[in-house]
Image 1 (cartoon, rainbow, N blue to C red):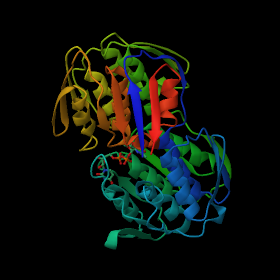
Image 2 (tube, protein in one colour):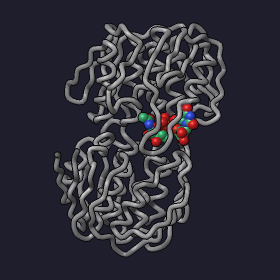
Image 3 (cartoon, helix red, strand yellow):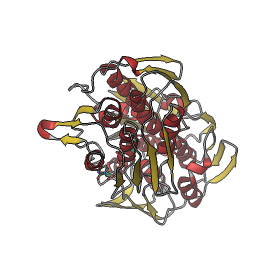
Length: 418
Ligand code: UD1
């Protein structure tokens, strides 16, 4: 376990280089299973979630080796389609392997993922899609057993544009002989990065307008190299760090087209933002303005993965902000922690009403989930006195060297590991 100890009140100043996106790296690592030849994944962030996925791939017989931020995977030696029990902490990631295992071996078995820190996270849409491809799915005794090579010819309409289901179904469809069409797929840029990796590896898929993806079957995976796209959530988080401290940061290597909803919200909060190429130059106001109504939605809507960080920003805004969380049902646990630091907020179901206060004060708070934990650290950067964020190892799931990165731009923050 780890904690972050933060002395607030220092405006951040300097440059931060973005790393590769966690939410692209995880499905791309899983997709390496479809390729029985070596692949090189560049700009791969070294995060605990990524290490868990590497552990799962090795448990399935793949070879994996790091060279700096390049990860080499050779799935040619994979022999089993059955994920073992007891890879603690990896259960969620194991779901991403169902599609590629089906595509490669026509069989897949994994522990049932169950709930998690931000609410119940069902996989019904993933399994329904597999069934539509002719796969037999059995969910008895806490395990998911899938059997049968995905058949081509299916047109699968997703009732909700789930990111994970879209990725899993694309990967399963790579193993079919004929075409598979997904209707109402997720539109997140990380999906396009996965498709770019798979197209580079010899598969064939594309979007048809914004509401369909066609995967052509009958292809075989071959060696390839791919660089992961920059992490838009990491970019957004460090932009909030500038915003909440009244600081001035240049976030390097970003893609503004993937950040339009967060950029709009940060401008509404009074930030000055200039963009030149991949440099996002952001200056925070002395005190942010309130956000009248921020609603999380599937991409291109405002990302749920940025809700907690904006929540932290709103706690010190001039007026009252309203946040509505529409993607996950239990994603306001940071609200109760922020109250310990003096925040004034009401949480009811999917809505948070946050009355901005002039200042927060340091307190001992707990990171219940990855993004919520990052939000508490951001609040600590602004608060008067010392903030201690406990269970900070949860932040490592999505940010490489979080404390060191912030220290590099003037934050007074240190980490203690038990
Ligand atoms: C991914 C991201 C996560 C992000 C989320 C939404 C990764 C590793 N994780 O998660 O960081 O917060 O997208 O942008 O890429 N749902 C169902 N049935 C299903 C699948 C999903 O009801 O079979 C529901 C979920 O309960 C949730 C919503 O759909 O309410 C969104 O989930 P989904 O888009 O699937 O998110 P993840 O892929 O889990």
